[in-house]
Length: 384
Ligand code: GLA
Image 1: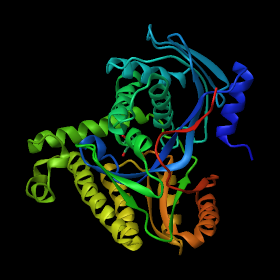
Image 2 (image 1 turned 90 degrees about the vertical axis):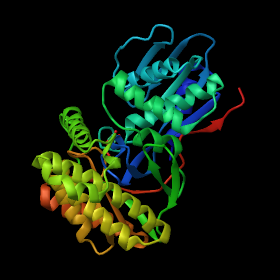
Image 3 (image 1 turned 135 degrees about the vertical axis):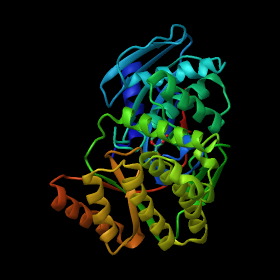
C-alpha cells in the first residue's frame, strides 16, 4: 500500500522534477478528557494519533512558498514579503503560520512542497492544527530554527485566533507539536508544561466519527468562551482554573443558571482531568472510563455542546462489553466521540458500535482504532 509519505514524495518528483530534501509530519489528535478547559487556563489530556499531515519539500532561494495540496488538488503561491489573505482556503493555514512566525521575529526562508494528509476535515480531530504544525515544522527546518513545541504551538494558536479568526485555545497545536508515542499528554494550559502519561495496559483508544458535522461552530464556541470569562470575572479570578470546587459551592447561587452550569462543567472537568491522569499512571482503565462517562454528562447537560447523534454514539459505546468508558471529544456539536476499550476486543467493538449507531440514527459512522504517536517531526531527510 502506498503511504501518504510516499505519495507526497512521488508527487513532488512529478511536479518539481527532482527529489524533495525532506519530509515532515504533524499528527491530528483526540482528546481523552479535559474539554473546553484549555482557554480557561485548565488541564487537558489529549494524545497525538496515527492520522497526520505530511509535507515533502525543499528550500527555495527566494521568499516564496509554492505548495500543492493533493487533497484539494490545488497549488498555492505564498509571498513571505507581502502577507495578505488569499484563496484557496486550506492555504490560509500555511500563510497564517508564515505570518505568525514572522510577527514573532523569525527570519523565514521559502520552500517548494507537496502536502497531503488523512486527518478527516471538520471531524474534531484537529486537521487544521496538524496542517499548521506541519507547516511550522517545514519552516523551522528550512530556516534553521530550533523546534520548541510550546512556543511553536503558540504560533499555531495565534494563526487560528488572528489570521483565521477562531478564538480557540492551545490544546490542538500543543499536542500536535509535542505528542509522544504510546502516551497521552497532561497539559497545564497555563504554564504549558506537559507530562507524558501512558495509556492503561491492554487498552486501546477508539475514535468514533458520528458523520455529523458542526454547523455555526465558531459562534457557539466563542459564546461558551465568553460565558466562562464572565463566570471568572464574577469570582474575581483570572480564569476558571482558579476557582476551586469549594469556592464554587459557596457562591454558585449568585450566578444565573446558564453561567452557573458552564462554570460547573469547567471546574469539575479540570478535577476529572487531573484524576484521569492519576488513573492512567496507576494503569486503572476502569476509573479512567468512569471519568470519561462523567465528562460526557457534564458536556451534554452543563456545557450543552452535544447533540442527539453524539449521545446515541456514546450510548452504543458505553453499553458495549469491551468498553471502559466513552464521551464526545473536541469542540462539540457533532464530529467524533472517543472510547477506551479492551485491546483484544477493539475490532469487535468497532463493528458492533457501528451497527448499533446505524440502527439508532440511520447514519454510517467511521471508526478508527488509534495508536498514540509522536508529535511533529522531520520524518525523512533525503540527500539532494
Ligand atoms: C477545539 C479548540 C481547542 C479546545 C477544544 C475544546 O478543539 O481548538 O482549543 O478548546 O475545542 O476542548
